[in-house]
Length: 503
Image (cartoon, rainbow, N blue to C red; front, side, top):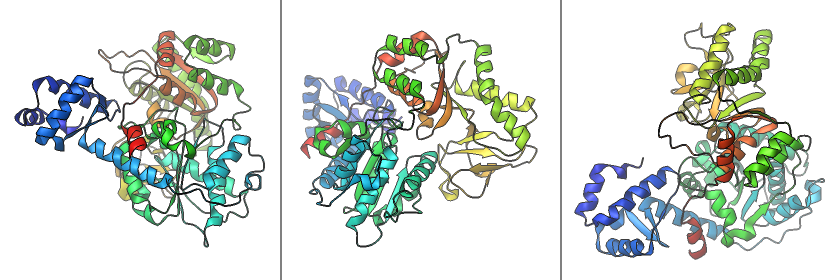
């Protein structure tokens, strides 16, 4: 929780003359911030009273009123800066360059062609689309088209919120560029936003992947780091979960009329053409109609375990990881599992801790003794290039006092005791799975067993989990939780759109 929730702050507010009847809205604002909002919409009466109070009191240094909404001053300042920075970039007149998208992407569909031509001419471009719509390939073609604007090879920075997403972005971007012989952009490697923040000011083109995951605070830092003359490309799926921290940057931008000329939506799926059942299930999720989704599960023959027993859960999990365990024992070299469990809660049957315990117990029974364990880093370690959310694999047995852990984005393995806080990643939260993909995904959406749980499933949560799968999904959920998830959509209250329209 924000430090302003302390009793000391409330005493300060009292001493500065905050009327008693407005103190409730302060508590509500801090509660809203915890849920990802950056503003609290007020009644007309409260908004007027707050405006009068702020004009007469020193607490104006702590709070702001904007468009009938209450904000802490920090969020007010950040959203105003972000809006102005985006509007400044959008004010550049479109470039008059000749572009034939089919030369860069011979098989580009109509929406991809529009995106390549339109985005290449803009200093600010937002490319959105669901899984399999070719966002990275299209973005690579946009960057290649921009190449003609520079007398020299442009400095291109590719960034993503997580290490896994950065690895995926590098692979996809380079695969796309290799088919564009005139691009001259081989060797460009993506890193996390945190790793590259201090170097972005020298970039000519900055491409940000998985932009839906970027918080207001991080996006504000990013925009301050990027040169005013640089071309900025945002890429992502606004239907996925927003950042764990406050803000809903991508969704607000794509829905704002102020930037509509800079947004390009890709509409045709390509990558999952061979897995139409999965694509159809994702679409049914976005429809917002629970019964259609449930009928779709049945019609498409999707594995769905409604019985929330521990035995059923254990059986499904161990079946899923069976091939990985057999490969570990046979080959003696850790690979990436084709199967990944994603869960919505941390405690109880179907919770992250219980699942990790169940799977870890099985590895002990098989005599693996930690070899091949997936480890999730839960705190930033910038000194060794490891950040919160990175996943590595243990390549030694725990018979060693300090086994080595290999990460995709780091050449040499690291010792486990270098990593700080880690936890098993046999099951990870749906939030943490963003930016990653797996062949098969096992989605746990169980009923919370913790009393007074604040967990509320949402359409965005389920959709995000479904879109992590490349080939197949399995569901562990009661019908009531499915209905609740599909029926509830998350809307974060912010003032960013207002600033985009007025700044």
